[in-house]
Length: 249
Image: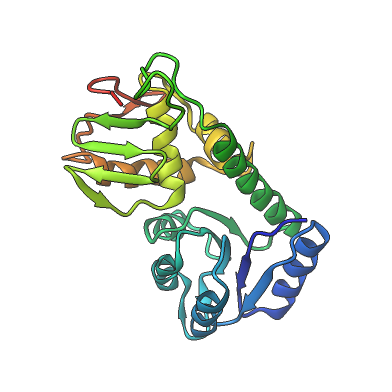
């Protein structure tokens, strides 16, 4: 049984019931539904959420605009469910704060698989919190996760906080986990497929856009000039890496 809170936001009742039934069979018990932006905000205010399944086209507004408002209720994992499958639509969804997307029509079992993979990945990170072998600890007996410093930005794993030039800045969970992965493995090149499998927890269920947009959003946060990155670099034909320069704890 899963105790995580899931909110399904979609005005197509048949889709909502189908997803709800599948998730219940898969062991999810705390499932709430909403058919509009207004109803979704009320549901989130009452129950909160760990996972939000969000349709883009809602009767009283856009799921894209609702996405940013959802962040006021914590930092749930937001998965867009959309029939709008163009690259522009998908990129816009990520730019507005989405963590993942799935295009309609879809198999509800795939949604269940994505949710389970996300939760499994979070549980693994919370349980293990591994320390890089080549970095010293704060004290000889400390087991606290390290704080990573790369020039103008600082990432604290324990606090879940990103500082830019000493100022705390918002960082959605998926972006934080992606940057944390790079910080734990400086200088190592990761392909888009490797990043999706490691950070999103699924093999073969994402595409290049997912990783590319999150890389771009991270650069907008940590780089002085995102178009000329000095920390998070593209290695042409191979993937991405975080430079080792100024890495410390």
